[in-house]
Length: 246
Image 1 (spheres, rainbow, N blue to C red):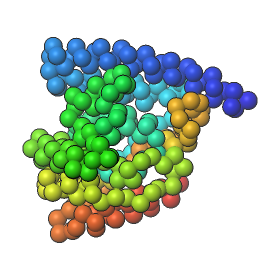
Image 2 (image 1 turned 90 degrees about the vertical axis):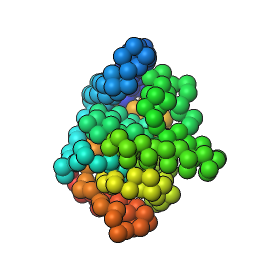
Image 3 (image 1 turned 30 degrees about the horizontal axis):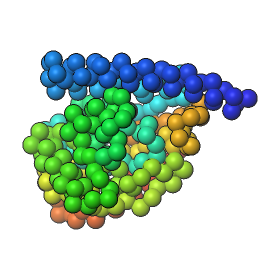
């Protein structure tokens, strides 16, 4: 019975999800070309609220907790564990005040309504995993941008999704490049729970009645520490929070 319900509610949500992407693709393009980047960002924020809160159509829930005040007068590098494609929308919505910009694989920059358009127009670091030089250059560009604009970058140091919820080792390279170009940044761990359970085998079927949460932990000051130290501390903080029951 639960499996049948998963199929029915997944179909309902995915129809809704597709319509959101199509409608907001048009709205995004209009906002960007007719009004400007600020208007485009606001449409993206709202679109991601629609995506995230739409999960209630599956009986699932989302929770956001912020355990620390975040500065707005310096850049931030958000470091998160990675379970699912659905990790992203709540980060964009709940942390919209900090203009989060993602490190993403270049393949996502084409072919997906709204999402690909936003990746291209938001200034995301679109990396080719087969071309280390290109990847470093893109991440460095993003680091320079957040340093100048006091925006934020979002990076998933595991590199690929872990639907099981069991974290893979964090790689240091991307974070090291961001810190080099954004030396004033605060590194803030973000703990993501439940999204891997929500879509463990692709986008269909989703698992209904899943509890998902995003928890922002206290920041880590990079001054006086190596990128390896900061990466290790971020991973340890995320792992410790994942072990807690909420």
